[in-house]
Length: 355
View 1 (cartoon, rainbow, N blue to C red):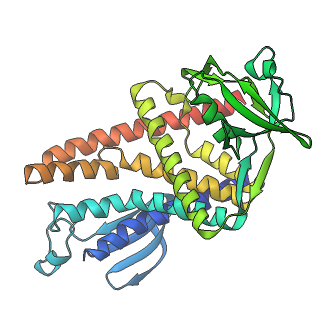
View 2: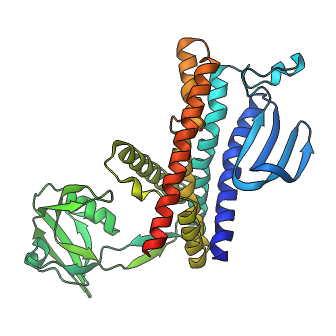
View 3: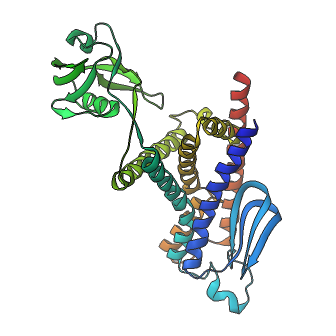
């Protein structure tokens, strides 16, 4: 339990710091004064005043914030502070400052993936067959457990994912599959068949398969700086796309909200990854960082996405949204956020009770 708590504090601390650092750096770039940079909420525990900014760690470690000069549109300001006021900056600059928080969470994930791939290598699931389904196209063609597929229609398949993608893309046309069995190589013709399967969202989809499962053989490959950068960017994009799609499916009702997890689940997973090693914990941190970015970009008032929505409306209308409308929207957003918090805590408790 102590490992989970420590891992949770470390993960959340890194994510919150990078998120708020994004807001802070872009605000300072555009000349906005920052009064407070806080990790955590509530009373100040420790900190240091440097210039205008109070850098602090606060008592409640469940978030953080950057308080900027003139952040509240209706706040009274000293005329000398107007050049440093957030509200008095062009709407494009204000949007950039707000978007920088989620943007820096994506950047953090990219940096983590880069250094993991560069120094720890890239783990690859090899295209080695574990089981062959009876009466499947693979069984009919004579493939066996332990065979390693090397090419599909003459194209090398260095990992299981690429092999599966090429088979799925066949749309049922015959494929020439080359494989290695022991020291010998052989080639067979296989015609994939359409099967109803479930995707990662639990949806029923039609896929073309040959009836094999992976043996689970994993190889760690060392890669150079350029390939590490490309792989990190690809990994970041793939997870961002998948996370955004998951959120969209939850909103549309396609994916059950029971899949959502809260701090308890994150703590458990962080502790588990920490026990399995630093690399696992780093990967987990990158994954949660992307999730945090997607959550914050949702157009819900009180989140960064809500502020961006208001600024986008202002950019189109040529004038800010009224204070009254913003207040009502903030209250609605707070209610929705509280509902989500209750939901994820409920899901966590149900998971614990069922285990």
